Image (cartoon, rainbow, N blue to C red; front, side, top):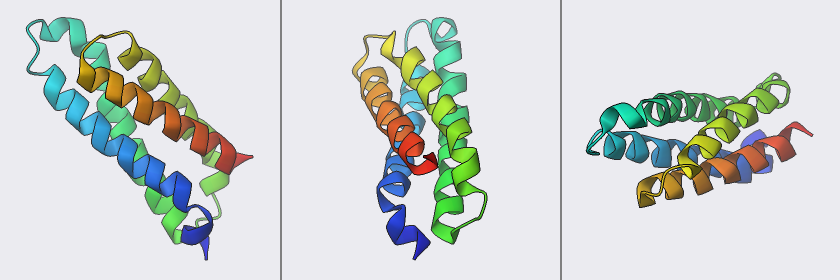
Length: 109
C-alpha cells in the first residue's frame, strides 16, 4: 500500500507542517516581527505544501514522486531561512524542514 511504502516521508511532512505552524505563530510573538517576515511566509508555504504532500502520498497519487522534488526545495528553503535565526522554535523548525526535505528527495528518487 502506498501510504505504508511512503510512511517515513508522510511522517516527516506532517511533523514539518506542525513545526512550521508553531514557528510562524511564535515568530509573530517576537519583538521584531518585521525581521521575521520571510521566515513566517516560508513557514506558511512549507506547512501548506507538506500537508498536500502527505495527502498525495497517502492516496498513492501517480504524481507524488514527480512533485516531491519541488516539495523538497520548498522545505529546504524554509530550513535554510529558519536556521538563520537563533530562537529555539526556528531551530526546531529548521531541523524538521531539513528532515522533510531529505525524505522527499529519497521518495522522489
